[in-house]
Length: 204
Image (cartoon, helix red, strand yellow):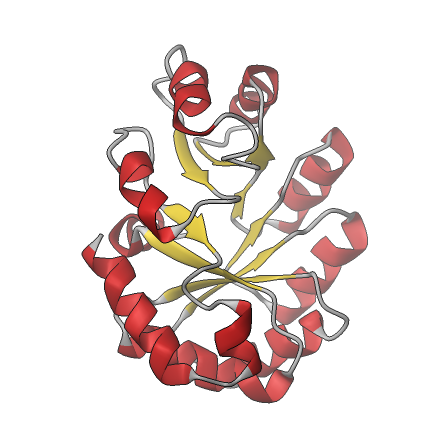
């Protein structure tokens, strides 16, 4: 995976989308606002249909799949050919499946022990989740202190006004945020608001 694209993006939209027809318009709206990365989560019944619709459109957006929690989901992501996987947490069995798939992954962690376990498996970029509920910036500083070789993508409960506090940490390469493509805007298919939010995100 091109980590540089995550760094340049800084705010990665984390989206739960259920309509395949909305996949391309959403990606277009984000890119119009300057964001070229998306994390589509497996939190809706039609999530994989949405992912396939975006992949089949050969869109330029970097397509990540989040909330990956089992081996069957990893297999499906492999078949579709997504650009990267994000997990909320990472068990040994899940880590084995991801390693075997050869899909780039940002594995989820919330403790020092989990962070070290991912380092042992060769990962130098991890997701800190659920960021705000797990102690926010202060906890992330504490985890990252003894692990300077590790970079973080904090996600979970991070609002627009919280983003800068995380990005000010040298260990943070980007922040996951659901506010860029919020539920209300998605339900209304308000692509203009999503583009506007994306522009705000790139300016943070």
